[in-house]
Amino acid sequence: MKKYPKKIKRLIHGYAAKAYERELHRELAKLDRSFAEWRDGAISSDELSYRIHQYETGPSRKLYSRYNSRDEDMSVAYAIVMGILDPEEVPSELVDAIEGPMNFFRRMKERDEQGEPG
Image (cartoon, rainbow, N blue to C red; front, side, top):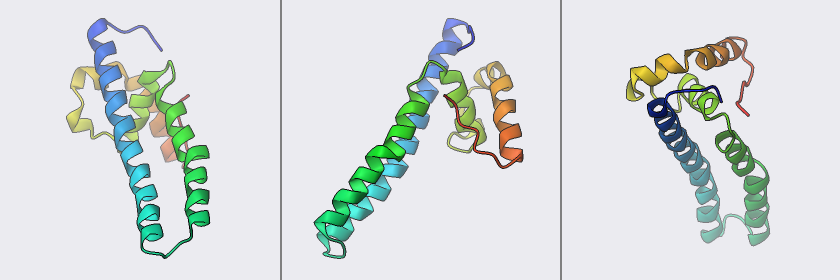
């Protein structure tokens, strides 16, 4: 991560945690639907176990890697550009500080590439 003033570092850390929580919540909600299907008898225990495994080796691992790297500024920039964080909720001083990484993800998005941090 680039060197930032302490205040910006704290903001980056806080908003990275917020973005991680939002994405994790979204993925866990999907898994919760599988549990509901299992409780309703719509899927077998074996199928539920398979879906849990898929979650652990897919979304869970991906999100952990994305948000638990040394490049939290890249994670926050990604979250803003991809709509996980609303730019209106992020302090303008933080947006200004990570404008470079945000431009990187904007270019990736324009090219329809999945530009992910870390």
